Amino acid sequence: MKNCSVAVKFFQTGTKGLVSFGFVFFWNLAGLVRNFVFRA
Image (cartoon, rainbow, N blue to C red; front, side, top):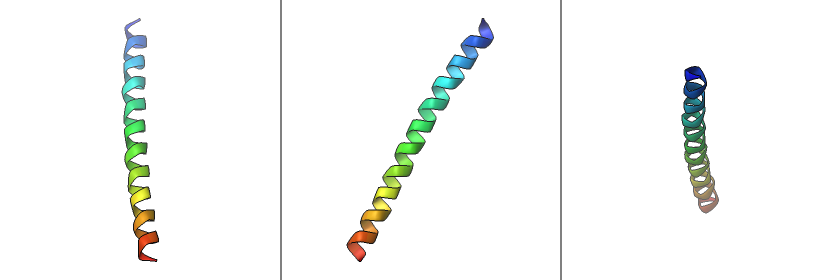
């Protein structure tokens, strides 16, 4: 039972990290596209 709890906690933190990483990645990507469009 303890292993299951640890796995759930790891999955939650991993999902949260993945979501925040994806948000930062897309935010930077949008900034790059915006700079490229304004420069062109």
